[in-house]
Amino acid sequence: MIAIQNVRLFDGENISKSATVEVEGQHIATVLSGETPPRTDSGCQIVDGRNHTLLPGLIDAHTHVFGSVANLRTALAFGVTTELDMFSFPPELTSLLYEVVEEDDGLADLLSAGSVVCKPGGHPTQLMTALPTLSQPQEAEEFVAQRHKEGSRLLKLIFDNGRHAGFDLEMLDLDTASAAVRAGHARNMICVAHACDIAAVRMALSAGVDALTHVPVEGPLPEDVVRQCVQQGVTIIPTLTMMEMSTADTGRALAGDVLISQNLSADDVHAIRCGREGLAVGSGDLRHAMASTLRLHRAGVPVLAGTDANNAPGRLSPVVHGASLHRELELLVKAGLTPLEALASTTSGPADLFNLTDRGRVEPGRNADLVLVAGDPTTDITATRSITRVWRRGTPFDLDGFRASVT
Ligand SMILES: [Zn+2]
Image (cartoon, rainbow, N blue to C red; front, side, top):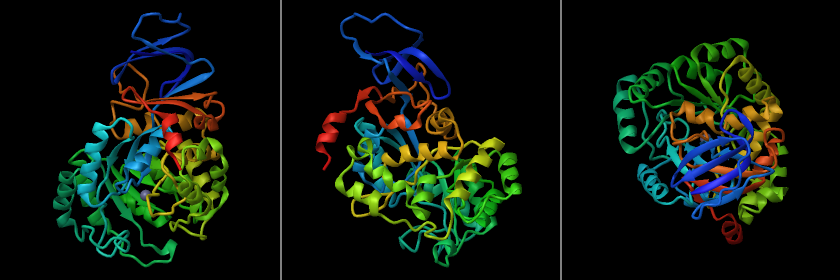
């Protein structure tokens, strides 16, 4: 048994000043509030939690693992115990990763969308020609059945004509997208739409998706779109870190924070400093994305922290697994969420939307996915970077060993 004693506890929703959390095997066994005398029974490992805050393992609601186990290890070093992988190909790679993370608690867990729903000639077929594509509504049922069989645990739909990034690509039509969403819902798959501009957001909403990811930098979301989001009960995963790295250089300071760089290879640090993204290069203003995120939040639309981390060996992207989630939380607070709301957006929020009833909150019976940080991230969100311990399913992550191995 592990007992984390007298710790400030964020349980996924609320904060308690002092609590003790006991872990038995892979699960949280008990949560006791108030000060407790130190346990003395042998076989119980005591962790003194004073001046620290215990959080549920963080969930990054938008990443791309690209089959890289190293990405999942780095993510865990930053307290990210689950990644929602929003596109992966080929499916054999996804199946293999599922097996690896089931065996190895030294890696973040993942749920993958697998192959995305896109048109022939649509994004991202310009990057990867072998992808399966969907042309018409009559094919949607079979297309989605195939993705489900391959191990896609959620459905990702691409609404993107590429024009914001200087391409001219085919975009899903409304009937086809709607048919895919119906086929996804019939299999209890949460349907997430990639939509970077306002026209794409409108079409994704008309198709009936459950969540939107990215948030336009071309201009503020119009009031009727915000209203429609509320009426349809959609969730937003704005990926402000990705939008920032596509439009402004302000996020690059992350590379200079030793609490970040101590967990990263020289390549990853270089990627944050110098990598480029193509989502909306040069054409937009991050302030629109920040303002729209706040308006949606104030209107009652759930906001989830997702980064679009997509670096991998050989791919120099400034949005790096694990590290960028801490920037995302900071940006959400800069946008106007409270630190407590930002913390919920990366714990209970994604757990609730994606029906991950075994994680996202500190309560008995849930997986012991836990992060211990020095200080109080409920008043200063950047304290999430001061990680002293991480557990996945009750297994402590060897932070010192990891840091010593990073070059
Ligand atoms: Zn993405």
